[in-house]
Image 1: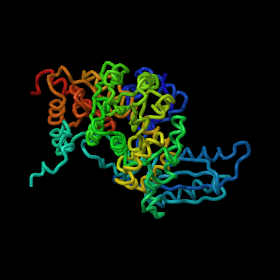
Image 2 (image 1 turned 180 degrees about the vertical axis):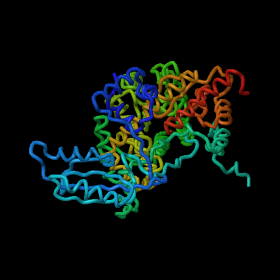
Image 3 (image 1 turned 45 degrees about the horizontal axis):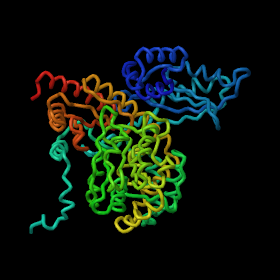
Length: 162
Length: 395
């Protein structure tokens, strides 16, 4: 019997673990782990695997913005219609429905400030139901998805402690 | 000056560590993967560190009462009640100490008259024997065996009890073996103790939270038939990754805690105030952090057991703390030779078992308080090393 939450916690932290490695860590067989991962994928609980990259250390030029969007909900569809449209843009990396002054929050990544501004004015603002937007440019990333970007991992322990 | 004439003979008679040479060697080597560390690799959870910082900001930079701040003692009693269902009075049944080690020293000095015997269950933490000797006591070693998963057996205990026995020190979950005594195992020991109503029990349960076989850890304080003579030594170092804060406690009947408090008040005055205030957060709100660390250790434990099997070393399945204690007999080397050659040829440090008592000879202690990456690399190197030994490639 595989502990589903334990398995999910493990692969959430390290997607590179193989079923064989996970099997040892959890005390299951490799076949059990593979079957469970397949089931979780079929049930759309596991949606995909990505790698967290600090692009600032590469030559890639990019700008990330958090855009808040205030909407009039559409009849029968609420906010889903606009959210679904926004999700179709590849450069929209995340999209959330939120409480507070604004209804949707999206994360948008493009090559420069001008490109972000064009997206907001040409693509988002004209959508039917969009009342207003507020754009925050991300200046520095400290932590994403549990990963600290410039962490201090030095082991300060002595070599032998009895 | 002839210094030897000046140094107490009791201090001189306590032998230096059995592995002093290896210790020096390992400490000097660079770029070593260390599976030889008896403390968590985690840094103290942030909320606990923050509580310590806030205590400084708020000006708690003074001595506390001798036994510790009453709020900290209440937090400890509340934690013990929640974990074990036993109530202690925070005003006179708990003393906050400088780590668990001070508790061992206090127990020895509060209880021992010269010549009293103290039963030490080996292999065990190195301070047990020394603290007894410093207090003019006579350590009587009771050796546990791998075929019993290094759990103390009632007949083994019975065999070493004499009319001079003052107390017994039990340390489970065990450093160095990783053995755990479950409630059923403890009951058998309690049955022996019931027949010897004058023997005090010092139960070192520093690793209690790191128990991978019982949902709720068992403790000797849970047996009403001996509760009036059990002193639990515990602390936050191992469970909450707080080793450097130096904070522990002793908890037990007031008649036994009072003399320990008397020694503490003259020798230590009071435990560090910053640490005392930080553990309030740990005791009330640390459960999730402890669970996270315990789950991580458990994953590593299974990887270690698998790695030892792949290397062809016999090892009973450790159920607690963060140690495995595999057998290296049959490879033609002593524990110390094995560890030294492994260190020199593969740059991995582990600890010779004889550091924890003579019966640890033929074993090595491997700590899994290390990153998974280091553990996996070290286990690969161990398998290579054992294979090379068997092929005679390492002299």
